[in-house]
Image 1 (cartoon, rainbow, N blue to C red):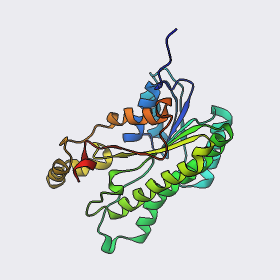
Image 2 (image 1 turned 90 degrees about the horizontal axis):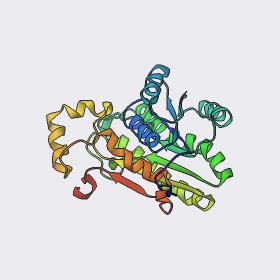
Image 3 (image 1 turned 45 degrees about the vertical axis):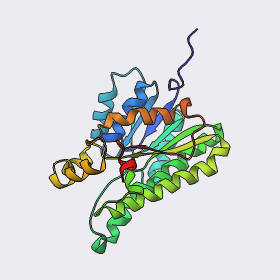
Image 4 (image 1 turned 180 degrees about the vertical axis):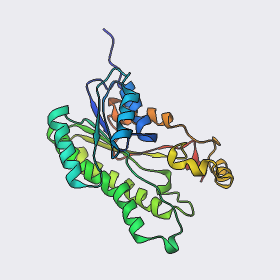
Length: 256
């Protein structure tokens, strides 16, 4: 009788926020390939439908829930429906977020508040609701998508870096409080990835030169290169990993 792989996610259900495109969709695909049923999330039902169709050929259950991760009422309504009608969430990937750069001297405070809501408050909002069921069951995996910018800010993205630094400490705080009750809470810190969010930077010669200098591999990461990290942290393979931030950055964190 063959032994089940510790990376096998069959029989588990994963909610990935902000998963209609980019890194979120790539991580949802990786989790599905490992056997997990998937609940996609975003605010645009059309984009969500396209993402669900993209995953439809995979031999797992794919559902899509359109809700606003920054709204407590929206989160509670959607996840209450999920828990009752779709099934419990075993794995939460808090990926939803945004990046809007600008100089600190005149960065609009309302824009910073939007960044805080999208990148930090949303993670706590969703985790609080999902963790209720996880804590009752005594098990669950929460993975917060942080950033190398959390401790390596670049000029012009200070506000974004600040929100991600806060998310790193929120991740560790979740682990401190919830690990004794059976939960695993970790983070992934991606480096430079080729996504729509970085489209302008990918065509900027000056930024391209900077990226080449500070990343030993000298290239952009591809979204599917996050797959191994998210499957590891979502699976039994990481049974003694808690409160950890896993850098997936082509060596950037070692170079600067």
